[in-house]
Image (cartoon, rainbow over all chains, first blue to last red; front, side):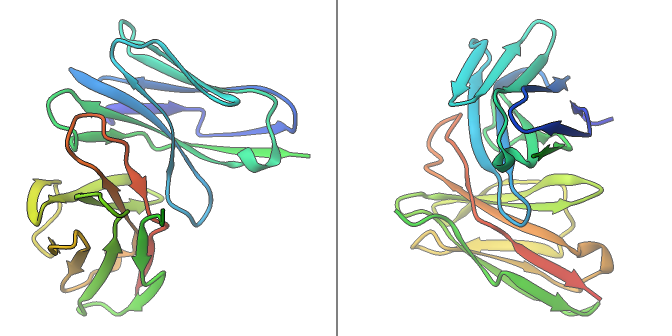
Length: 113
Length: 114
């Protein structure tokens, strides 16, 4: 069983609407949780990095939240744009090893006009 | 500042051949890590190099190997290719000196094994 589970697997929304993507993890102990955006045919780009002591981090229209007690994170996208169409990947890093990462399978978001 | 550059962008090989992929990190970044991305398995960590030394290794067979040069550029080699090696291979660079160093990914090399 993957230690990082993302939901939904895919999502279609209309331009201008908000949406929330979920990430549940069992990785423990962890040092930080990251959200990446990956456009088709390109490498992932970092959106947010949160340490275990942070519970929210914003990057423009993207806001990530973290509940370390329930081991859940969410990525909220406000006022979606067509360019938000991409895969969003949640990554959890073990506390003692920066390269011991667990990747979620990603959520494929499609924003339609 | 130029981003992470991976070459070639696309590659087609046949089973049994070997392949070498190249990654040039962001200037000043000493850590380079490699990942395999497939639709079925998602992103998986292959290995990481820091100052020419392999610092961490994922759970891949010995057919997958890498190295890093003194200018931090890195190469990844896959020998005796199998059909299942078809994937997008991503490289990422970071300063690598502390937990939480952000990773900067290249756009990957799409390898197709026929």
